Amino acid sequence: AAAAVEERAAAEKAEAEKAEAGAEKAERGEAEAGEARATAAGDARRGAAAGPGGACAGCAHALVEHMATASEQAERAASYAALQRLVDLHSVASRLVLLRALLRRCGHPKAGALLLHRLKQEHLDETRRRGGAAA
Image (cartoon, rainbow, N blue to C red):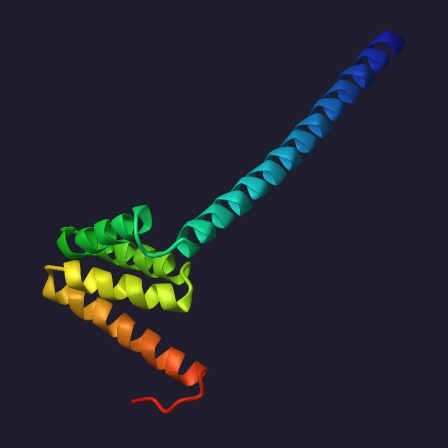
């Protein structure tokens, strides 16, 4: 009976150690994932800060195309939301340049109207930030 109790205690101890090791591993994984997210966000900001040209503009154009041509409304809405987040990564001046470039390339009237609305809103917000009258 004593041997069974000792065996059981050893098994419980081993399980507790295993659970603790798993928790530590999960915490390390979460920390590493957080670091990876922070690095990716930093990379995205640096890429956005480099200007509205290149891969960022290409990605934005692809999102506009998908937003305008996807058959499912949920897909169009997700593309629009992703485009908004991508534009938000840029500085104000770069946003205006990127939105103008997207408008020039956009061959879809409804998508163009959404881009124009965002461009106007950015312009108004910038005018207000600078203390000028909204025209």
